[in-house]
Image 1 (spheres, rainbow, N blue to C red):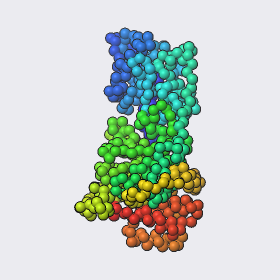
Image 2: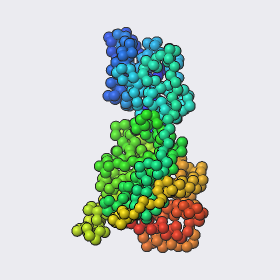
Image 3: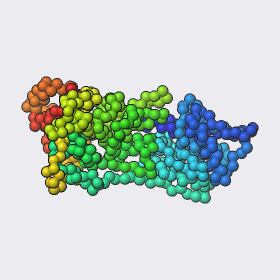
Image 4: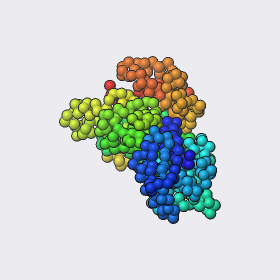
Length: 510
């Protein structure tokens, strides 16, 4: 065994170790890579040959065979370049064999010998630390590797600097974690003060932020639905270090963690409605994470909800319910976390002016039924809160900016979230920690959200009249629990149940 590299999946940071072995034998000059390599791995031989030549090292005129073991594991990507080069340098006695055996390496080589960015370094760093080995990675990926591991990390800019380090003519400084804190609420370009009117929608947005609830906004074009959704991340508390590691690991595997910076800002993903099922849930040749996983512990915003493909929307149902997106392919079976807060916006009908008396839809109500039926009932059932966002009048636009902005609302959201953090501390059914009321279920939900007698009677009556499903019933309890937490009271009352039911009046999926 000469060098190691990790090919990364995600099932509990499932890192599969690959040994890179090199044999240099007499015979006609040849450079062969074996062990089920894909095209990118097969092309490594040319990149490695050019990189070694760029630093003044010529390969011997002998047969060079590189074996990637185990042979039955498919090898993909350019991150095998660096371990192949290291293995060859060890075989040529340029690098010390004993020292290199204690490292895991991954990185892409440029033709001039520089080591370029590759995805998955964060997970590989965790895997290397668990195995008690150091890590060699590109300099650009050094900060993310340092965030996840306290072991020895070498992040050289080039192959030459790595060789000089082991020869003692140059010392590589250990990389330091780079953590980016989110802007304070209200200090960015998205502030609730920008939205005039829509007080009911703002109240619903605060409730959704406080409990992590899914939210559907229905209203005509230009009513401010997208503006409201864009301001939701500014109301949410920053990620704690453990959450930041979870989010950054998904971004690292997807190749979106450029610069190695670990952000404490909650992700906000707003894919276009033309997105495919693989783009939303995950997939492709390398089973990469989709939008619902890239939004883990953040917000997934689906604008123009009915315009998304029916198959795409229905593929989100299982990840929304379980908090995991399972990507099953012939050559891969990967579980990515997908604990997201779904926010969706839609027009009431195709033209968007169903309830506007002056611009009434000529095909109402059939137009609305046809348009809304593009979304399945089970999908609507997974959305906790349904609200109407009416058109903004000219008089509303002439009003002065609201006195309360994102900073004030974010402070209240943080207080409510802290209550939930204390309530669910240490609880992790099925291995997933509970962070918000939206994640409480089963006996735990019945225990923490049991309403008083008046509230229970109202909920039973509403369930019968509104024909709520069992899922809708439990979602009402979660919203009511959040409303009680916002008031700082322990008991869920009739008023909380009534307000929670008011956010369910648009039961479009029934």
